[in-house]
Length: 548
Ligand SMILES: [Ca+2]
Ligand SMILES: [Ca+2]
Image (cartoon, rainbow, N blue to C red; front, side):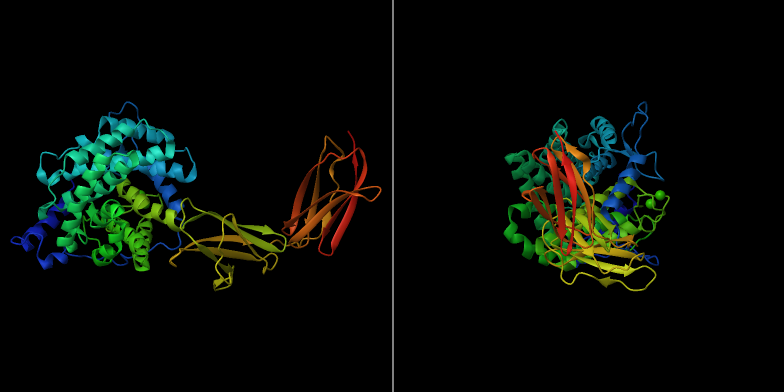
């Protein structure tokens, strides 16, 4: 993003300097530093209800792609523009974020739709690598290279995982080494951005070291992480509960969750119980603030706390921020602005990437379902869904509303469990009536997420039992097919007899009500046979002829 848009950093520094001129990290007051003047806008805590996280992610992918420089003659070819109201600003961080977002999309969906866009991004990134970003000469703005190198590692890892292409590994490794070899000043209270960007980079550095099996990098990551951790302990309100530039204290929580506590998992829960409460939930917007970005990092931090503690209150806060950010796409173009005080014509690519990585991706990993659909079958509606990639959902409930009538009711007596594929038949339906369904995914600890609704009209015609003529008839080459229909779901048995009444073939299976086709492969002698279908009290028989 636009590094020089430092208005907020300067405001934050001014407040910090005034209040803490003689205190340095240790004062108890640091736990709750004053913020900039708050000017809440009516409805600032708006929430999107029951959105589909994968659909939001997909729209964001398209929004970001729209803002890529696609003219091969443009010196910024492949770079991602800042956004709608700052198209002239093209930066490496935006571009690295796009590589992560599109690669993750490919990993999630198998779609190759953004492969060309990713290739263009790499062209820009290689010309403008993270470790050459501006601001390095000033101790207070060294964070920009560190921030960028954090994204460089994250993007390259995701790209490699999604594509199997190792050819960018040297880029990620160079970012990792830059962070490891160039620690920046993070103890100075005026350099909160340095601290937060280091925490972000450290979370990535540890993961990168593990990913590529580099023990030396891991040692450095853990040493930096220890420093980040002890500063957070000294001044949690500042390090965890405050924001600077585009960052907030959620970066410190995520960074430690993804580094120090990976190495010391037994210490994490109590630490997060003590320090997690410093995370804010929704920062109220003010003119020029980047509150959507700060909230995104807090969201990321809450999610880490949820995983560290199993405490659902963190999930609730995570979920609250996520739905708030989704609601910021008021013009439905897939992009969100950096502030709730911003407008729908000022959507930015980088904060839209934040929405994907820190919010939608976490939801998709934890509780999303895909392909939630309702199919009309005779006498019933069948709901089916697939758990998303890496889901943590343990059980599901279904809710139903009859269209035109008020009220939504749970139709599952007990939560549905088991392994995919998931399906549930709603047999309590009236023909020609339209129903809407919602699916509630439950985590092992009981938090939930609702997907839907899907809408379907129950079939007007009830199923009847029927047995069709085999096709082809005469049957040749040892193959034929028989169509049949069942009046109700149940076990059906299919037998073939020769004319002497001897059974020569038998199969049985559980079928839903409605139409089915049974394919037969056989090696009977040529001749005339009788085939018979039985299901409950229904039965029927027909003849078939077999020739060579
Ligand atoms: Ca928008
Ligand atoms: Ca827009």
